[in-house]
Amino acid sequence: MASSQVLDEALPEGRDPAGSSLVTTETEPSDKVWQLWVAVFAVVLGYIGYVVWVGFAVPDSRWSWQVVLVAGIPLALGLLGSIAALNSTLNRVTLARRGITVRASMAYHANGRKLGYYTYTDAGGNQYSHHPAANRSTQNIDVVYDPRSPRVNAVRRPLVEVVLMHLLGWLVALGCLGTGVAGAAAPFI
Image 1: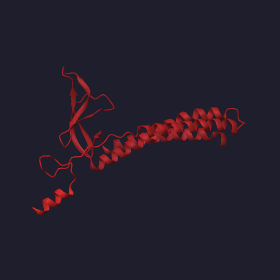
Image 2: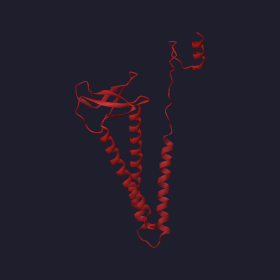
Image 3: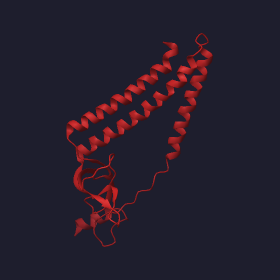
């Protein structure tokens, strides 16, 4: 009896009303989106300032600022691609470490037409959906999800396919980023 009293005192006040030692928590939605937009705006404004500076700092070359301006396109695509490749790689590593594989079934309208996504149930009994990148026609697929964040999920694939897919993504993203950096530095090379 003494150990349950110590446990009850150590637990926070947000316990299960049924009297068990289950702790219920609620997460607050993050409102940090404005910080992302401010950072993007600052980077774009900084790059425009760099283009103007190149236009005045390199008077010998007539096309230098245009080259730097156009180089912003592959630079932005490469940066966004690198962020997406990093996010996808980290999600796949997380799923490989602690992912749980479940069977997901195609979701249907009430009239029997396919909805285009799959639904699965996590270990806690909550239902989630997986939206595949390609339109699949199979009835069931194996989905791996993160038990700490069940919305992070992916179709179960062979290791070779996952490695090749991410390697190709990294090569394209870094290729675009390298092209953009070379174009932005072209007036000084």
